Image (cartoon, rainbow, N blue to C red; front, side):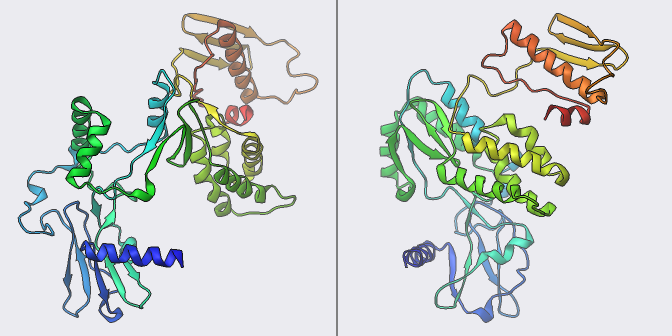
Length: 373
């Protein structure tokens, strides 16, 4: 009942704000909407010759009178919107010099649009509890970054406000001007906040997965680790997306993430993810998560040995005559190039340049990639 009441409340609010056409009898709704184009200026619905409805949403056709055409002054290629993501939040966190209290303010809506993909048009229609059809003419931009027209101007205005005013004054002005917030998504200042599906701790500067998400990921992987389990390529792909999200926390598992898309090797890679997630608690946000260029070059030759170069320092290691005899005599060039990487890591450790750095090893040999895993 609580869910139903929330749905009814949402429908009523959208109807009051003219964000949907409701109610529309089923016989007037076309199953194949004619066309649809995105805009932040507000959509419009017109009636087809057969009496059915279709949404029209173009920059040249503003929803309310007195508003000029967006095409006259907008060029969306000039306004590439940067959305918040893990790297941006972690960069902000590690740049702080003292513990923080975190809070979340959520605006009710920024701008809305109709999706342009034909496969999504049917999802504009919602059936209410009275069996009527509602046509949602304004879908919030969270799903796709459509027009992108307001990204840069909004960012510029934010910089001006921060320069001239404090946070308390900004919130007071927004309240007075009537900028609508979503109270259900606002959190007071605390040590920890959940944001972009991670839990951030401003006091300890750590980040972790919510317990329920960690449990969900573990259960997903557990199903693939049953003895004699058989699974399809599509089934393996299902956890790949969520694990790609988690890899922001665990970049060392990216090499196992690639293998999940290869069914023959998937079990081994899933096992690595499974064991790591079972013991994972949180990570401390290091100084820089971006790869550091250290001038590393390594190569190997089965006819000689291994050579490595780090900046202006270099070293070479010659193979013994017996390297292909005895245990491990079946090792190939992939194994030898992996030895080159291991030697490079040992040298970096000896030089003292690894602490607090994230180094990315770019390889051209697929055999080496498999050996390193």
